[in-house]
Image (cartoon, rainbow, N blue to C red):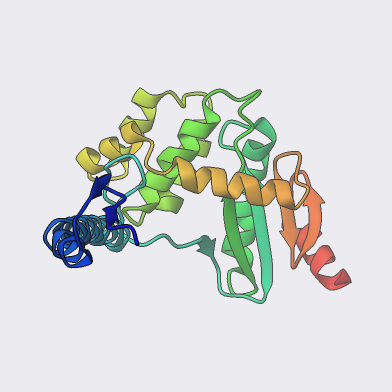
Length: 235
């Protein structure tokens, strides 16, 4: 019978010598490997726990992904009214037709606030309106301070001046905390919210602004109170 230790490529005089060699040499090696593996497992396990804590903390405190801006409030839809007729508007702050629809939407809200619920959604047409996306971001930054509709109105009242300097001025005009607003806008913290609305619009086949959905029924172009009531009655 061979008394060879294959890992060491050595021969021993007896089986007893071989066994003593294995106990002394190879058992220690296996323990070392095992210990190293355990230390690595503990190390990477610790790192995973740290990563999870950071991720959860970022979500809890409203950290905007990749920007460093911390949201001041939880996101909520931009709605006005408490009625049963739901009016979802996909709009663009630089769009002339949306500007024409703006006073009609204000009229709908003022005349039928108890009958309708108007929800505003972002759909900047970036290929033809270069300032629309940043204006949409700015309105979401205003929403973070609880003043979406005030800022929304300010933008439509000043459609021809939507550069970043003007966007920051409008924030001051309506009494926003400009330090937080500017940080929100400069970091692009709300860009993801705008893109989410754009993706939603695309999934619904929306190709133009403004587009309205009255209790799910699609209407393109300016929506008057009379047309709204007609659409609601036909459903």
